Length: 311
Ligand code: CP
Ligand code: NVA
Image (cartoon, rainbow, N blue to C red; front, top):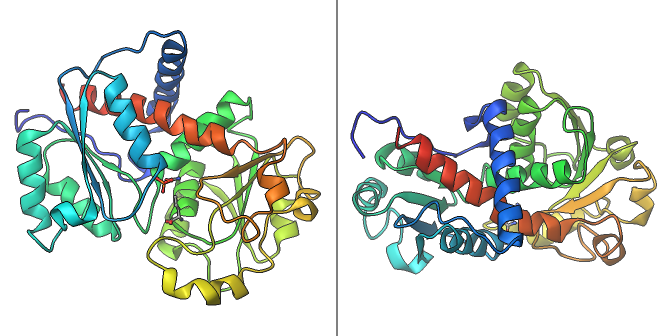
């Protein structure tokens, strides 16, 4: 790649314009159909993806790695102990080394700032595979899943019950691209980052933050939840279990939602904590569609980023 090329990264949902997001979903649908027809498209033949993980992963790892294989490329998984970001060597040195050798980087880091530094120092596209602040690939796959299920992205009401965490931050940003209403019910003290909230409101997002689950879920078209304790917060698990006890998505809560509401969870799930077994396994749940769609949407994302950054 020449220095004159402006490469694109996907560090947060708002790195995409709405039209780009729409185009991404169109490509993801084409790639999904092609795969199902037994004709995967090797559009990244000869390309290599480096995958840096500071935290565990099932879905993110398998979807990026399998996606790259299906696109004709290769993926290298770098586990936490392999490169020890910022410890064995600096983030900047790792970024510049990787950019000399590979074509794309996906990273799952604790601090969002580490990912930003990686992206600033690597002149190849960098994708956020989850940080403490954002999980854009998850929410892009979720929106794609809702689009497949014919939910109107500009009109629906999405209720999120639980922690104002990384997944919520990506939903807040998604509400600046599409005109849905996003309502979060969380315990006091677990609201989203105020700066992200203010930024998204300033961009016109319709966002409701409440401590009342019934209020948030009232007439919702989508009821979403995530773990009460995110990766890296394990020491707070007992305190969080007590504070979030009233924030479980269960059949009683679902009675507030629209009759045809979909239940979403990014997984991994803790049955009996943030969601009941019956709702997670019930007919309204689309959690495994979400998991599968990580593959299709990220394939589209990698193909698009490689193409954009090669102009
Ligand atoms: N939803 C998600 O990102 O799952 P993993 O943590 O298993 O990658
Ligand atoms: N909020 C969760 C999401 C896991 C996919 C976490 O950060 O652990």
